[in-house]
Length: 316
Image (cartoon, rainbow, N blue to C red; front, top):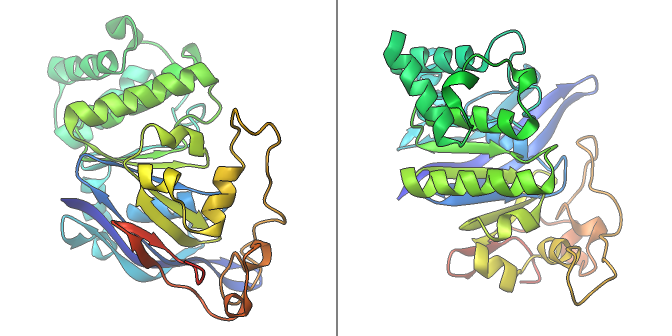
């Protein structure tokens, strides 16, 4: 069952030199109870794609086309008041930086209680017990006492757990995790991903994971979509993606991963384009070792290359 369906999303930003497009016909879907990872190099459009779902965009951003369906309703048609009822309660967000996502002037408990009061209309002891239950569910020790702690008294990993607790306390159906392990050490990264995976299984929550770390998604994701310069270039079930990548960019990303067999890391020549660059044809063609003439002036569309496997390349 599909709970979230993004179709042909186009978005751009107003700059000093005019309007510059950042997303080009982005399409992917999120299945009930599954984890779908959106991966790619920094600046490729992963975060802005995710933020478009709840229209949490800067004033300079403008969505110029496409639809975002949640349970059959287009979120882009919703008013700010209607979206407010969905944010947090139905679709929750784990922001990119746990260090700055909590207000330093209020206790963690106060911030949890605010979310509960807004989205569940609970007060007093009932709201307090709900907040303690959420902190306990994300394995924060002495949860009741920690309600009175300020964010600076939490480690990076505990701050991230507190943010996850805010999503849990409202039993959101969809969890958008935007680089949830940023600035955390390797051990804590594994703990956070294990926690998200456990929550997903226990509550049948759908998770959209935004990351540039392919090693992170290998053991956790059900589906993977690869972005490059504002376009989805490949979507596949996770096992199929790692065993049989079809797009040259996907292959290059996987070849750049460390392995026991290859001590010399491969690199992708060149740099990803900026939003200011106009590129005709396939946006990866300036860096692609398999580029042919058609790649320079025509845009490849995703082609079905297997079961639920799509690749946008003329060389498929």
